[in-house]
Image 1 (cartoon, rainbow, N blue to C red):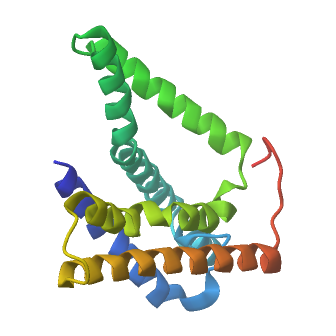
Image 2: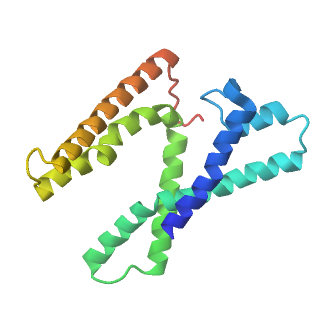
Image 3: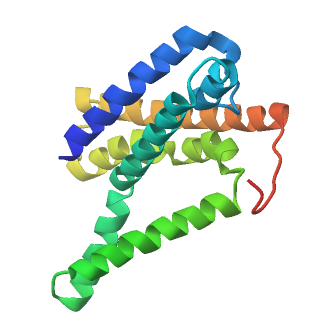
Amino acid sequence: GVKFAYLIIGLCLFPLAIGGYWAYGNLITTKEGILNALHKYHGHDTPKFLLALISLLVVINCMSSFQIYAMPVFDNLEFRYTSRMNKPCPRWLRRGIRIFFGCLTLLISVAFPFLPSLANLIGGIALPVTLAYPCLMWIIIKKPRKYSCMWCLNWTLGCLGILLSILLVAGSIWSIVIMGMEVHFFKP
């Protein structure tokens, strides 16, 4: 299920990214997206119905992607309920958890509209969780022979992940310093 959903998302987004760059090149700034470029460069010669349909498809894509990426949070909250109450999570509570989390996400996105400009920094800080920690945890858990092939490989990958994270954090801080960042609360 989830792997198929990721496949569908990838099949939708990669052609869009490749085709968008092929069509517009460097005309799209970091502040805009392909949707803004479509309205900006083709708004006068494209039927309004087609622009509205494209915008609607983007909204549907975002809503379905949100459900997939928020699934670990939903599962965690349902697991906590199940472990405390020793019974399955009722359907009405599952819906309530999803609605509450969606509203909380909406509130955060409206309250902090500058968060996308911090995405690289947040991603760089969180990158070791994906790239470095699994390799280092494997060494601690499996305790391979010192200087064996797997020991060296995992240490190399772990150190490379940490180095990449440091470079990404430094680059994102540099980008924020160079480009600047306007901070407005509740003013998207």
